[in-house]
Image (cartoon, rainbow, N blue to C red; front, side, top):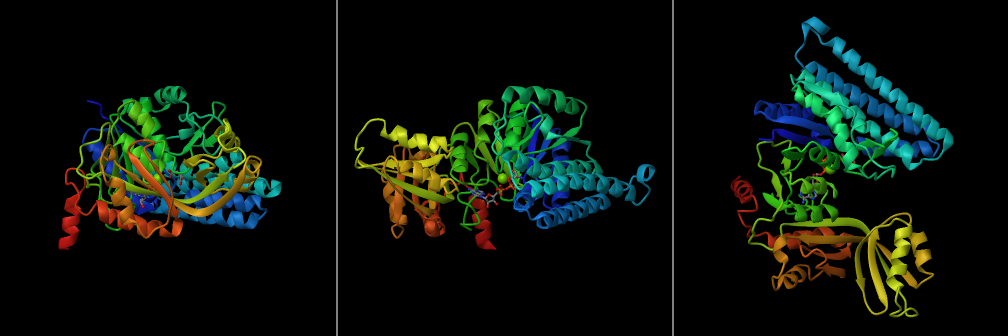
Length: 485
Ligand code: ADP
Ligand code: ASP
Ligand code: MG
């Protein structure tokens, strides 16, 4: 039996000392049951956002503002480390009964880390230009700090844990901000830096999200990228399972923050989960699934605040389900671009010319719909849009409008079922639908609406499709228990 398991804990699962100790006990539980975990951790909750704002603040020339942010982060990490060290049973031979020695040593390395970070921010304030390379460098501190601190906390909690610098293992290209991992090199580095620890019964703990080029320059895998790291490590060491531990009971039928009635989906296929992630379900990073699919490794999404809960199992094939959809995702902050070209009507090469503009600006397009003279495209709202519109206006008339949301309904069972579109649009009949797409993947039906209508639309769709859930797929027990409370 394959006992290797990659356990990834997200920002909220390591947000403070209490959460980190909870994480330690979850990992210890797995070890007791005979698993060999490799642990991947995110930065503590909100730290990545704060590091990004420290970097942009510094680049604006506001040195004091940037250093103020890192000072607060320094205090938060020092305080958490102190709480963790005092929670650990003392080792009289090494530190004296109080554990003060351990706290001082931890504070010393945390201070050294923040001193070097501040050094970079001072340089950034002087130069006034934030390159993607420096941005990756600055944000990497989140996972560098959390992983080392958590490895120490695990050791304090009695686990034989060892810190591994993710940058030694996750080899990527040099596309800063969204670097592409190099599978072959990663596998080889994992054999070198992770497998030997497992061989002698240690629990490696590494940061997610960060990597480095072959030359050792720090890179990142894109926001939410710790899930991706978990899948890369799982694929690279041929793990028996990958567990994504987060702050909800699993993949739900909708974002529970938007729809409080959301139900846990007990099993979902790789394809459905990938579609959901791509279309905005933040619970999993869009690229996570691929390395696991390639090797047929089961992925579980579990709740670190409720570890006994069964979570969601992501499987190769979709289980049969009575309802057409498994879940509803929403992607906000989108813009619709309408390109209207009476001049170039039906001319061949026209669509290519349009897409080349998006390609040149490295701007991915989510949805497309065409008519005889016009093409509508939806893209993430970003600062390049005016330049893209200017380039497109050489080909055609261009209009664009922001504050749009894409609602995406996902399920294997929409293939070949009649009347589903009618039910969907009946449920949201009061909402102005701007673009519709069905069929690109056969498992999703999506449409674009005003951002302000998104939450209401999700709740109406949820009521329409999940009021009589199939107990084989959805956690209806939880609904009954809540109702009887
Ligand atoms: P982590 O820090 O553990 O990576 P994230 O914040 O990235 O956690 O993802 C978990 C969050 O994803 C949940 O708190 C939830 O609000 C959101 N979410 C969005 N869509 C879904 C969904 N369909 N199922 C579960 N959670 C979802
Ligand atoms: N800390 C990174 C982020 O906030 C990566 C992650 O948590 O997955 O985007
Ligand atoms: Mg995440």
